[in-house]
Amino acid sequence: MAEKTLDDLFLDTLKDIYYAEKQILKTLPKMARAAQSEEGRQAFLKHRDQTEVQIERLQQVFELVGKAARGKTCEAIQGIIAEGEEIMEEYKGSVALDAGLISSAQAVEHYEIARYGTLKSWAGQLGLDEAVALLDANLQEELQTDLLLTQLGEASANLKGTKKKIA
Amino acid sequence: MAEKTLDDLFLDTLKDIYYAEKQILKTLPKMARAAQSEEGRQAFLKHRDQTEVQIERLQQVFELVGKAARGKTCEAIQGIIAEGEEIMEEYKGSVALDAGLISSAQAVEHYEIARYGTLKSWAGQLGLDEAVALLDANLQEELQTDLLLTQLGEASANLKGTKKKIA
Image (cartoon, rainbow over the protein chains, first blue to last red):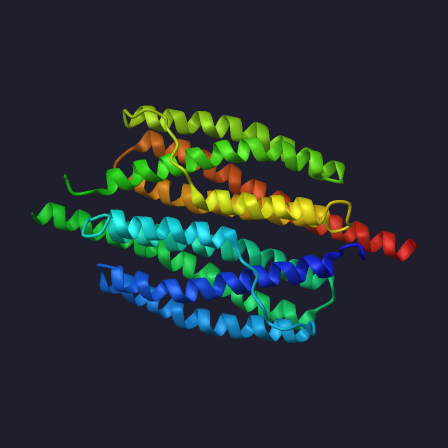
């Protein structure tokens, strides 16, 4: 067996995030349906569309390294999504549901940010300049989405504060 | 059954990260033993010591909300750690092992960054000022550790580049 190299690690991690993105694509519409606020619903649907494009970029990276686009079970994203589904169930109909959904989505975002940061750095080390650009495009979108979710979390709290004062 | 509120969500998430930190505390010495570079080993051991202090801060937050410090199984961290252990096994003795370990550690860091960001924001919304300070202290340490790991990943790549040129 040949010794494993950074090329293997890059490919393994690419398969990991490819699987993760496909799971996220399935989960976002569920989160949009669960969301109580229109802003939350829109944010999840928008990110669903972004995720489709991100998956296409990953397919281009597979092409660049001459490998078939194939996922590899990612236990991390399975765990993160399972926790999100638990919140959807346990907090259904509660005032804290949207805060929980946003929090789950941010755990997903941070997993992606970690993986894309690593993959982009490795692509640079391997001299895969086109892959760097594609992975960076995904990374920047995830960072923006995370920021948007933070703002949404704070805005929804302020709104609740206002409602309380009125009531 | 009383309707669930942000207080419940705060406590549930506090239990989640408390469980996660305890798992991380057990995993870091394994990662330190596995690391090939002295810098990697030192980074994991230093973060192990930080994690002990972070767990104490979480115990103080439990006290502030008048609840017993108790963890709640966190499937997300279980999945993230399982992937890290897989890398330790599959890349044992390979040149890419440390890159894989650093990558796994960054996935852990980003999970913590997401959780502490959320918890800090909720603590503010709930008027728990002392908890905000404690959670922010943990958040800042995780952000610094993530940055250190990024630098370590790039430095170890540069070192490998140098070795290649010499050989």
